Length: 325
Image (cartoon, rainbow, N blue to C red; front, side, top):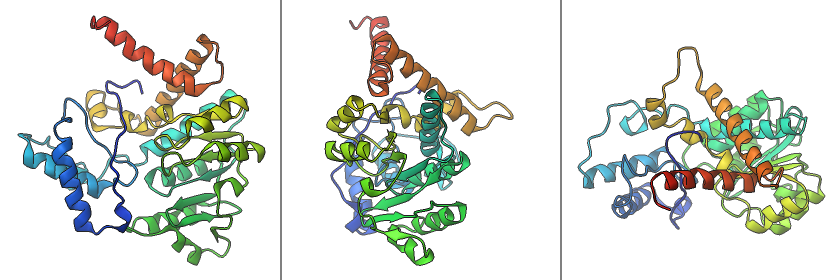
């Protein structure tokens, strides 16, 4: 990300969709009782993700304060009853990265039909940014199914989806009541949506080898990850062997680090500069860096391998500097 912190992924085998609010709270507290041994303000900091929104972060942090000698920083963020400063950061970062991918091929996002899975903050903020670029978001999904607008979501339709999903526990299928053109589970599969670009933003391993091959056969030009590892290793191998553009999550999801409170405190915005512009510039730098790595190691165009190599080199350089090797 170019920031002075790294990132990692983890989670728990807990389904919040069929749990009460008190059950979710008790689970978060129990989870943090064990997790607190391995995290801290100078070690590692949990953040939002799939199934983990602002309420869950509040429960986790409340338990962390109960069992640690920790004085909270004075602030106005979500942990102090305020709001998240830039909840769209991750989704906007994904789209800025996608735009760089298109530009590298002499194209753009304008007019591209884009299938999105998931319907959380990342998926919704991606759709909003796609509209700014002139692209056409076509779909959203959740555990109940897929909503599909054949002619795409415009700003008014997107506002309706955002309003529905702002209610805790609301299902995406409710959207069809407000739109005569929308289809629910018609088609019932991602591969049946005629899209130029696919943005998987739902869950891990949702695109496997078979789905990857079907997407290639249907003429999809790119798959750009917007969640933690939504494509299996076999699917990535298909993209590589069949020449499809692929944006790996270890590069596309860095908007969270770029816009974190820690980063903004250590590297504040200059007057007149916007956070979205910083994210755009950083995503451009990230794309150029991993593209350079792929060329350097004779795997031109393989952004997945380029991202892994770039990350490895950063860690290796620090280890060498510290005398660890």
